[in-house]
Length: 449
Image (tube, rainbow, N blue to C red; front, top):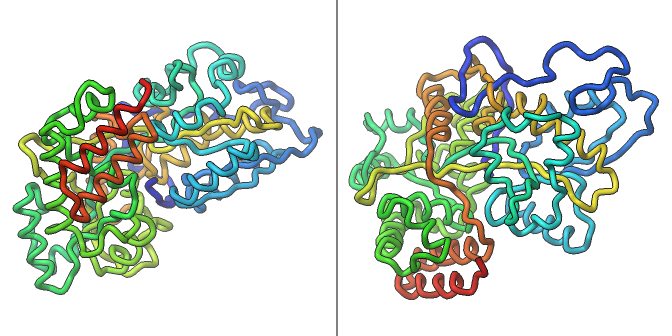
């Protein structure tokens, strides 16, 4: 769901704590005809041209160009027909296509509810990986990341591309400075004070995409851990009612945010592209709630902010301020995974692309765009093209927070995620909290766990 662009690697190296490591296969090319670790021959010029389809929301178009250029050098006889849409558009297109048995060969996958929705349509990965990569390949990936790509029965059906976390706020430090704001808000009251100073300067303080159910889910899950650490996962498992005081208090805090912190009409604004482009990049709003994936917008020369009205502004990021009795925490998860359609007619070619993105050069390219923290261990990233120290600090903090997070981001049940998003939107629109939570609880009780 976070969407950024590419920068060139240089000298200064950032190691993504737990989620880091060098890519195997980045060394010299194998001799002609030699079988590499993934089971492919380097010299495949005599093979017939194969075409596969790849649909996703990440990589972005600019990231994909870099990935595909590198992929084509390695596999010149595999053509990839790539389609990318914003996450809501991707979800709709994929659902229709998969239901009709016309899904792509390779597809982007989000862990949690989306993975559960499609797990029966996905090719089991471990048998292929054991055959192509040999024993011990699992040790090259983050264990925490791969655990999230298991189907309900424990079958590995996807592999992570990156790790990210919510809920964070990207802010325009230059606008803060112009308004005389020295520090980012760490509490709800401080946030209100910051907003008053920005409003006095004619600046919209915060642009939140309340139209997106997924973002409302993220906000609720992150904020609920400030009122009852871990309680939301008990409710997800059916061990705690959604009418519990923890969630009543969480919804009360969310109502305050929509009424007093977020911009007017937030429920009608999508995170991407509306809140990002029409508010934050247009220099109309000083803050933009999003995830750690978004810090890559600072990366030159092709980061998202370049070419916008904030191109020369200094920016940064802070975690959602403290609103409840417990300190803010990050909810982390596999932001983007990759999977193979079980019904693909070109599984050999699909495997090569899958392998490239999950374990090979694609991992390095995605890491260098700062599109989340890498799931392949040992990946290193340059920050030479990042202009401001506050932006380098944001990237460093993102990697550290993701690596240390103990709380997962996505819920496992699609119907529960959908109902939670609706409940948040209903409360924000004025529905009584107890009624919204009672309806959420009814959905929860119908889930077969």
